[in-house]
Image 1 (cartoon, one colour):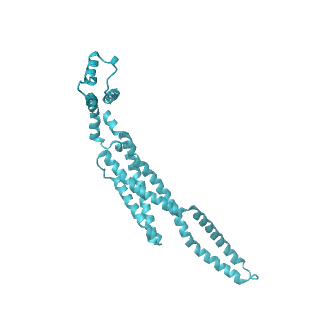
Image 2: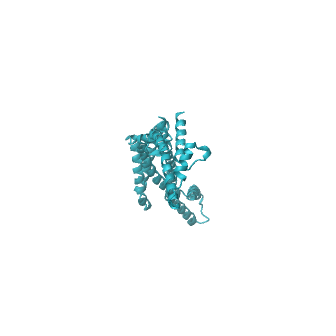
Image 3: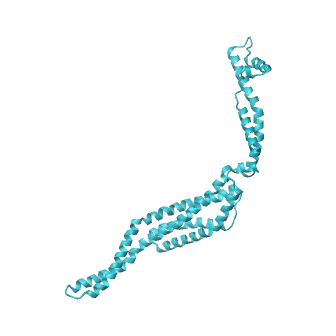
Length: 298
């Protein structure tokens, strides 16, 4: 009820402040007011020229607007005072301190967590494709050797034993060749690179956004497991990305380190989930959608 009264008074004051200052119709004016308006605004002095008369009327009209707005402005300033005090007390950043902005960080981090799982799957598939050629080379050597022996023995020789030895090797080689074609068609390398770039850019950006949002709402940060794990993940993202040039040059140590770092990132990410969910429940329960409106109600 109090909020409705304040809103009504503010609307009346605003309408009064910006209402035209012209003369009301004579039927709506008191006799004294009609006479006063005619004398002050419409009576022309005998020696007054047309330009001077017009200028005087404009000045009188402008002064009337100012005088008319002063009481309404005073009322509005008093009505706005609680809003100004509330904003200066704990909501100086406005909606940046609201629940809507506060929920951006957990939503993005959960999305990045799921994306990390999928990106890891893409990376393992690309690794499988890349190493499959090395796995197939011994089989190819064995198949070629047996085929050479069969060809050297001639058609009259009994090559059934060698053929029996060749059959499972060829079947295994054909299976690996088919799997390799499927992996190549999947485009795992390009997908892994694209998703990894997205994780790096979004992860660093929204890690900083999360800390900034906390500072906006509370005025300080809270050192603890969640903050430390987030900082560690951000650093490891940068280190994992820095290894890519060495990986492209075929350095196995860089590839192994890249995989190990991303396993550590996934572990820290998973370890953050309970503390992140605890923070999310507190934000949902305590942070208002509109901080200024919440401060007024209090």
